Length: 93
Image 1 (cartoon, rainbow, N blue to C red):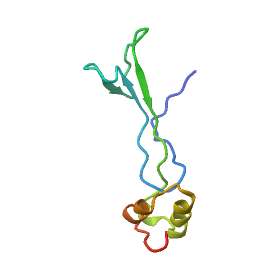
Image 2: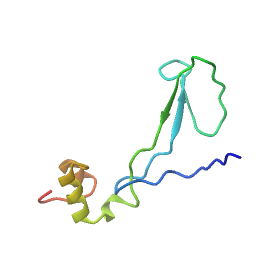
Image 3: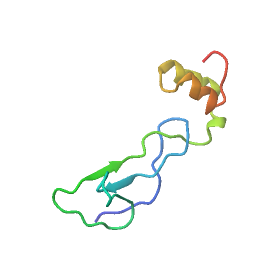
């Protein structure tokens, strides 16, 4: 038995709320449609693109520990601009 869930995926680190996963059928055509919970018939040769949520975060960016943001900048996970604009962390980042 296959169970479906409707919860958004958890993220790996601090940041924005993650987006839900999506399925795009017939991408780049006039029939393009984004589906998530409805059934869509596809035939052999039809194109389907899966958009996964990727990273995001647990909680609001402004509540993230500034030292953790600085570590992310040092590791190359976050740019200095994002540290300033998204997380509000300035100074030596």
